[in-house]
Image (cartoon, rainbow, N blue to C red; front, side, top):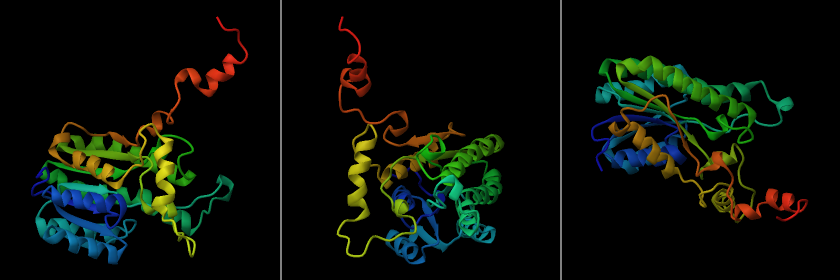
Length: 281
């Protein structure tokens, strides 16, 4: 406990899912946390449950005025900003590439997933430079590293977040400001529902449907949890990672290195196919 004692952190998308888990973890570790989100009721409820070390501010990360106000809460109330976690996100515009909606849905997706992190870095950097320390973390995704792991536009923007992270990390390193990204895999959050609601009369929750799926697709045989991301963010926000910058930390249970294998290599489908057409030695 106390790994973030007296540090000041902003978490966007902090009212639910990975952001809420991180807010709780940061407060437990001694940080003053500003929860920034569009979900006003959830944000206020979470901040109240976390006590005096948590504050909520309604924020659209794609609007520069909102981001400026969010940063100002940290600087005016606490006089500093030690960590910015650009975590706000959603699935965004989807579909086959030839069906891509280039209108309001596309603009909203770009604003939330890429403009948000850029604006956060833009307005956090001057404070952290003056302090000569700080940690900026952005939520990217394994979809930004591998094909077929997310919608096309989402995947492209998450790849852009990784590139942005590396580029800004080089600029801010001389001021001892670290810039890193976290790339989640299959984490149990509401993002997979998108803007849709469960069917009327459905007796199964999203968690009940997805947990066994996530438990079977990657080498580590369990679903990813919001706390797995909170733990990664805690490390990157703390002084324990003071020599790490420009890094994209993959938290995916091994998904990007290969699918789960429950049978011996000698009994793999490929091996069985080869054995069917060659002579035994």
